[in-house]
Length: 293
Image (cartoon, rainbow, N blue to C red; front, side):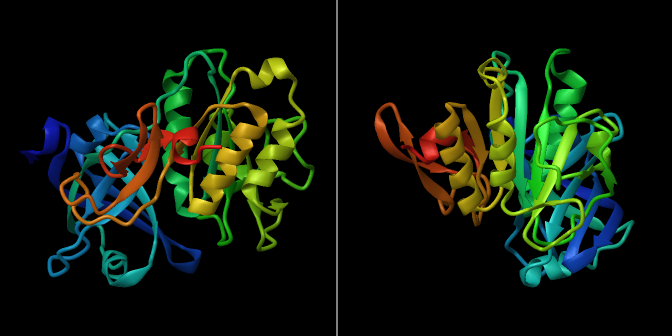
């Protein structure tokens, strides 16, 4: 391991501990990466070398970690030559990673009820956030998660044992790993998966949020990650209901450590519009800064 950018990012040759395949080319990869595991925060990511002869790394959000166990997990969907090669990795193989990178979510202690909205491969950082809130959040916090996918969800699903009054009745399934923590989660899809709300995940979240009294909404912060249209819809929902939102952006990137400026987005600041790098200035930004009214 070598110290790197800003003394917070490490380079590690991480051993593959497990590599599980799910439907439609989705994979969950667990890596022995103790230095990254000790520093990772929800919303940060790793830049992964997919093969020795493919120089460009791929950014993958960190989904779960164990600082004690020294491992991290990432979820990815095979797209392109690099991830095709990565999908062939087997337990015992070594994969070079750079991370953790970026500024993650910042839980708001004044509005401790996190409502997490994730779409597709944007779900992982919100699972990380949910587990962190369960471990370290205030005792009176009441987090809720809404996840959407057009592919079969690459997780164990259960009929939720955690009540969520006001949610549409069709949304009955949840992620088992959150149910076991007592965190309510509900799912949405346009692909007809059983037990899921038929439509956009943002519509599912809105339908529930609009049933809440003002006092409950005053405790809520929205946290989201997913494709750009979904994030724009979350920002619009936040404006409509007068809620703060933190958005984790997905963007193509080359170096991943702020040198190439290839992942810049326009962000509105107090001093006017500015170009920010998603990799190190983000990937998490205030919703109103990325999608102003």
